[in-house]
Image (tube, rainbow, N blue to C red; front, side, top):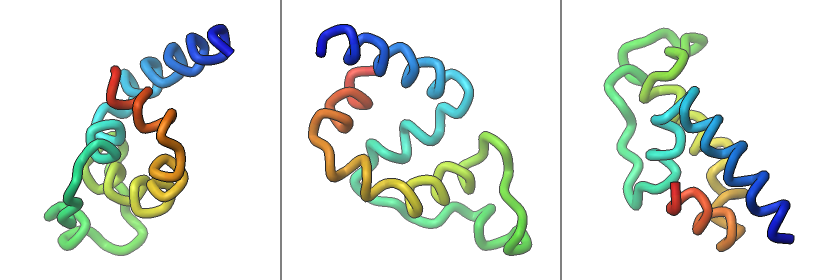
Length: 77
């Protein structure tokens, strides 16, 4: 289990280095819609942008929130 946790932490750190706003969005208590979501066409996502982080949390946040261990891990990085 410890080895898996270390591997998960390493992968999460790598993911955060690529898309840091996603990790921050998952940690937030409130999730206001970013201005870019309102102003861009429906099919547009800014890679690495606040709109991508918002969309990721909207789609996958429930899975993160369902796991206390996952949320503790993301809070630790």
